[in-house]
Image (cartoon, rainbow, N blue to C red):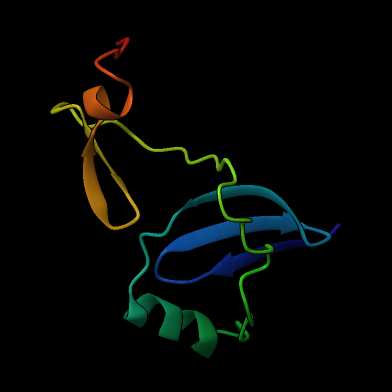
Length: 89
């Protein structure tokens, strides 16, 4: 079984037979990606998932900080505002 990691500066996709198993926020830098290519990695091409339809529901796993905030789409959001004041901790 071949496992593929599709990596950029924003996200790391774990794929088996080009089906996504998991996606996590990337912690890699341009230097890290350059080192991956130098050690045998190859250009991945476009994102392995089709673009979302307008108005589609998307899943995003994020870690909530102690302050009650999380990052999404390059923005810092307050969980209480997103959830209408309900946050179960």
